Length: 215
Image: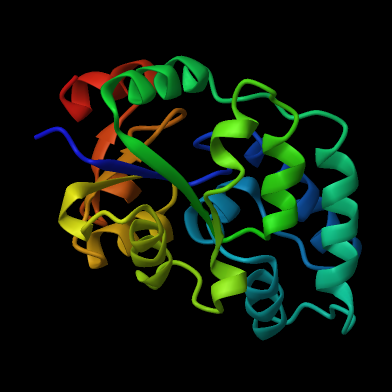
């Protein structure tokens, strides 16, 4: 059934910011004596807030300074502002959603500023998204809590059952399922098993999404 609204995650779904962000995170943690492989990051750290990363790392023995989260965000914002591409197919998908009369919003565990920095680089996308940005940190209930999805749906005036969530992380997929929304998991670089385990329908390219949405 064609949905009335689509709720997108930001990093890894709309903008291709995750490779830079994860590499920066790995390097920053290593500078503080906490070594972690990229496979470990993908398995258990993707989709978390930066403050959540700090809490988890400290519990595992990392000696992070009290202001590490703020300092990491400052570094991240600077690097993101240098240029982040869209995920291939995003512009065409939004065009098709507009033509079909389907509304959409963005729900991210990242900060509003992070979304503004990455999305505003793309003038064909930014005007359509800028008034519908939702941050799990502003809400103080980040994913996997379903509150972010429910808040975005309420903003659009659409019932949860009429929404589709598009995510690329296990916490995000868990949130969509818990919100009672059909949840699609974008797995661009693997088989999507971690997303499927959370109850998501796995797909591998934005070009495949219109057919999944029924138009």
